[in-house]
Image (cartoon, one colour):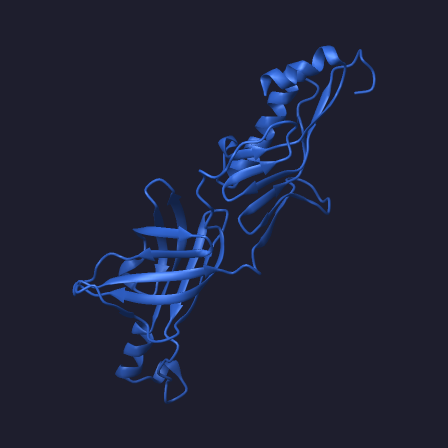
Length: 263
């Protein structure tokens, strides 16, 4: 604000969320994000589809060098695709004219399902709410998988099969395919409200959307942060993930202290 008689207006500028921790540019405010669990949002490339035998031996479950991709979207949707590298071809060239052996191989050489997911970073579990699966019996079911996330490697275990073997899926993050943009709501402007770059979310600046009602620095601070909170919640984040933020104040000194004390 240029004139001291007018209420101060605030602008919270560039914010960054890194590894499920909001990295924002906030004046003189910085908190550690080391305790926060990194995000699994993004694209993952399959590096292993094994099974752990009852005797403790780990062997390939889908043959050598299996192929696959797993995608976890920020909006809660996911897709899992696992394929054996060498698959039996339909000798007729027509999938509608296959042999019993060919149909069996087509079924057993792949594991595919999609739907919605949630992550519990405390229990270290991923809950898959399966919409459809390559195994019809799994349609409209829920599966909870214990997972491990070490840097750019993600793995989870499936419940033991009847023979006692435990399938293990191992993936690495696709570092070159991690950018997704969150558009500004109700706007045709060529800019984004935020951008995911890997597990880092860069958030654009924000003004209090209710400046007509909020006429003092304190209420404008609360209004601005609540507006940012909505965006964070849409990405499954909270204000507790804030690491750092920049706040720009324009107003007389008598009123600017309200924002600082409220923050």
